[in-house]
Length: 364
Image 1 (cartoon, one colour):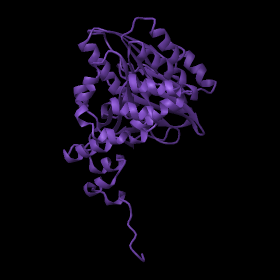
Image 2 (cartoon, rainbow, N blue to C red):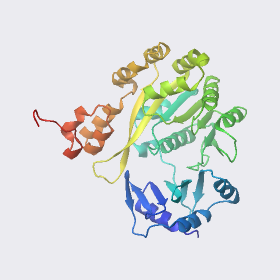
Image 3 (spheres, one colour):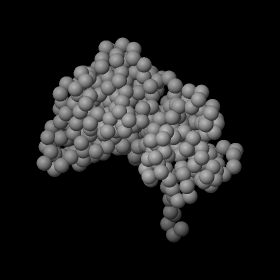
Image 4 (cartoon, rainbow, N blue to C red):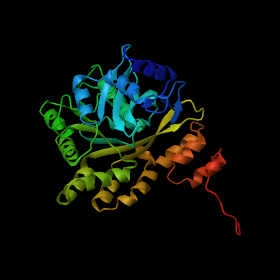
């Protein structure tokens, strides 16, 4: 058994989301959003490098020695699965292990809005799940794939970096391919997938213009495309896609978004009221004629107003979802306040007054 497995086993037993290993500090666990050190000595440079080398394949070890950061999936001896990032910094090696549950979650267990399930009734177009790193995008996408797998008979091709949740085929056939292992790039993976009779293509990350362009082509040609972007709102998602492509493709991109984009789901993980876990809170934009017109006329700054008034279609802003969670006593009010875009309505619920803005008294 690799020595690093002991830390990973401890982290999993504690229910943490991530295990951080760095030189000069003890191993740390990400517990409900906070980093907590475990009772262990500060890790030395050669010690940690030895831990990491034990779990690297020959190919990965060669890549790391030439200065590359590594992203890969690692399975412990007892079957625990982790997404791993290994890097070098000034004091030596660092590594972060993201724990991947052994069972693929369902949309019901994630307690996502009901509209997410309804969106999967579409047979073509694009659904984007967005948010910053560590906000549960991969988990939500895995649950969406599982829903399709259970309820429909499809050919689902998933392009990931790296493969996280491992799906077993139920009603559908699921083919999981890994960036760097099975395909040289996401764009090439999509191009290949379109020749493999797919119904659904999952794009693990739409990180460059070529990938976005190929994903758009797939969505326009009769496939359901699920993808992710590191954007923190529907408005920023639309702007990011338009800005990622050359100026001469701008009008074509806006036309695609207004006609083939199904929805944007932007999520953050917010601490629950019991402080024992976090809940996915979603901003949801569902494409309709009014939103399409705003996109085509470069008025994306008005999208938030459409989300606020589109509840009958399942839409909501992040702040609406946060406030609903606070009023239902599901969310920690302080965490909701810190995640809100407009914090003023949340101030009256805050327990820790130190996080509120200071008010300067006249002459003070």
